[in-house]
Amino acid sequence: MCEPPSQMNRNREGRREIKRGLFASLLLVVLPVLLFPDAVESASDDRFTEQRNAMVKEQIADRGVVDPEVLRAMRIVPRHLFVPEGIRSRAYDDGPLPIGHGQTISQPYIVAYMTEVLKAGKGDSVLEIGTGSGYQAAVLSPLVKKVYTMEIIPELAASSKERLKKLGYSNVEVKEGDGYYGWPERAPFDAIIVTAAAGHIPPPLIRQLKNWGRMVIPVGGFFMVQSLVLVSKDRKGEITTRNLLPVRFVPLTGGH
Image (tube, rainbow, N blue to C red):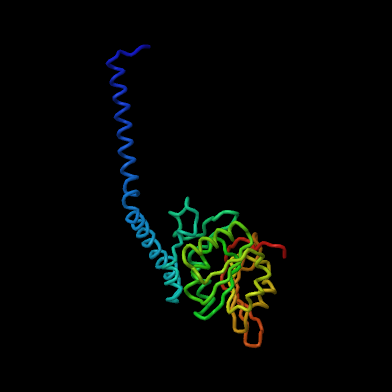
């Protein structure tokens, strides 16, 4: 069917109007980013800051975490930069999030709770097993002298190392390796934090813990009830353990 010339002209003009409208809409989105990138970034940061403050109050402080230094660390570390970009809007949700390779970033409350229980101080050297995206190490960074963190998955070890360096966490050292065996070259440690569930407390980690040291570790199989355990070593090197609360972590993997 052939259209009359007048109808064809109207159709072409209509298509041109649609294209002009789409172009104008695109400019409204793109121009602010090109002309005022700092302002756009600042607005985004403000939004995440509000979410982070709400997270600390509602998910952490209201549940009983009281250490002001831990609350401050949770308030200043940009959790959204430690999750994949596609789920960044969910960074401050009350739960764990996937970070790839079958691993997760822990629930904010659990990160804060484990950090508080650890009781690490400004002069302490801390070993973390299970770097993941680097978030727990970043939270520990302003609280202690040095953080040594191990990750068995090469891709996560490399990306977390780059991320922590880029964000300025200069007192964090990342190593790719099997965390079950610890980091004997950097031992002993004032505190050890394990962010993956082990079937038992690894003897190498106990040996690398200083007298008067504390270790927090989830214990139990992946399909079993896991318990967050506090391991304490006294001045004579004697060990005591205490179950803190039920948890659910990804398993500690490796050749053990």
